[in-house]
Image (tube, rainbow, N blue to C red):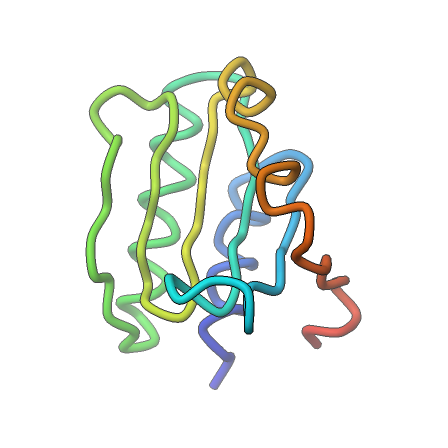
Length: 114
């Protein structure tokens, strides 16, 4: 069975999320062990990506603690416990710039997750 991180990453990738970044938050944040940050070009695609994360997590019996922002489709946060997925509209991603905010968090590369 794929890990929670692998499941969430595959879900955003399958729905063609752009510029997917995985931050290793272990020892940096009490919120989660990893953040997945990505964006899409429309509200509908943002919503579709977030729904895919929820659906794939459920398929693998991972708990979705909560999801916020789905109605607006500008920034959807999917809290999976150890992994938090941030799906931005492309216009919002640069504004919030989570990668800079959490700049001390090391990036995880795809090959490290497989």
